[in-house]
Length: 391
Image 1: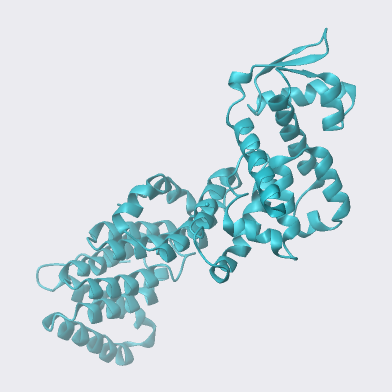
Image 2: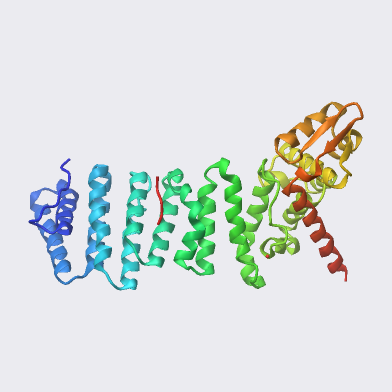
């Protein structure tokens, strides 16, 4: 395959059109191919002379898309380097945005063909742009490509800069919601990033804090998903979901009320409440892809933390046995698990059959549990009377 090397004798854009159109029509034979190649080159020349850059970009990406799977990565990168450079010829923000949409839409159209290179092409396009909204659109396409092309590892590092990107882009609430959900979907592709995924879903749900009932309903599906993801995650013991309006609406929804009830149990109650819930809602776990053993294990750890927050520095073995519903032999095993998960800082006094808790080191989990309990109590009372780097 001949590599594209534009020379000074011909405009680079015209050279790309000639190269891609010749390849696209190669199997049709000279008699059919030559008129078509000439036509496409003539259209490209007319666009260049008239400075119709959007028309030229549309023509070029269409031809490039037809042959992308038949040329080397080096050639494809060269082709798109010339195409992307056309954005520098455009002054109108509206036309820049239109050109960006045309180019990026074609780049992501075949995600299984040279996916990492296509992501690099979007990165290069992003860095050529000065228009903030256009940059945002390219970034969104990069997220789409990362998931569909299974190259999420290249885009994940950029998530650390989202706050600075948001300041640069100045996007509205609707776009922020789209962004946070797209990032969450990227992170969901990797089970080890469950915590980060939940963080972005939480950001998404937080944007509904001041919305009316009709708008809130748009977040219902993701609210349910966020609760289930929190419950499923074996190493996530804190979240800010309980008091968010987008999540709280589930409590009054007959279909999803059990989801909210489960969240409330995990954040404010102990294992006995969970066991009652499980017995009263047969089939719930299976419906939502939850595993009984995993839920019980997480509730035991949270119940132990809750014990540590309520006892005066010492937890009798008997209290742990009763609260966690375990045997005498399993008591210390669960204490070790809580220490390993950094949920409690304590030592075991086997002689006196107590756990001695270092209160100052218990940390954020207990604070969160206590805060949730205060909020829950208050709620109950009131019912009676919240550039694009690619490595």
